[in-house]
Image: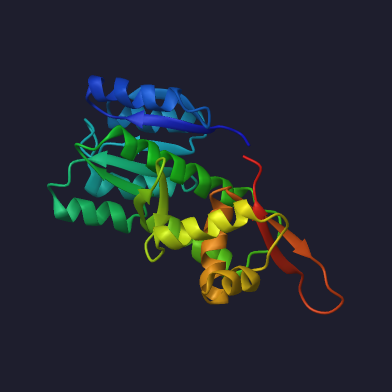
Amino acid sequence: MRSLKVLIAESDPLLQKLYSDVILNDPSFTLLKSVDTGPQMFEAMRCVDVDLVLLDLYLKEFSAFDQIDELRKEFPRTDYIVVSSGDNPELVRKAICAGVFEFLVKPFSFDRLRAALKNYQVYHHSLTGRTSPWQQEDIDALVAMKTHDPAWANNRTIPKGLQLKCLNDIETFLKENEGTFSAQEVGDRLGISRSTARRYLEFLTLSERVVVEYAYRRVGRPEKRYRMALL
């Protein structure tokens, strides 16, 4: 899995340094450079493909109301984690409607930033690294990753609508039992429905905690079976 290329667009040199330290300590990411003005950001993005921008909406010489749409139009394959104040509700709405991956309101903890970066790394890999056909539950889990709560231990995150206890129960079950299991089998063993078990299993798959194997049958689509990844 290649490292993801990050550009920091932040006017405050101290925050630039702090964000840089977080990124440089994570091998999943490569820091391209830090810029402190809008023109510098556009110039840098025109010179090299950027996966992710940490973007302060109050960047110098940058009018977010007008230029967020310009960024999306000129660089449609780049994603954004906004690192900004939330004091202008209309600007926050503008950013969210423009499809930013996350919006971190200053001041935020570095654990929160690390969680956002990890969530983006899993999301990006799941979206771009897939070779098998998409199923509805796969897309549901992927979309849910953009509306998550930072509630999973060890800086992990879970989507809204999932419960930490149930997630932990499923992960514990897979750790303690060898072999592969279908969503129906997991649901039966834990007393939950097949569809509920499948939602949790798909999220664990996207988080690279669980591996999917396919059991091919004579008739119909292959059955998806899950086991714990070798971490």
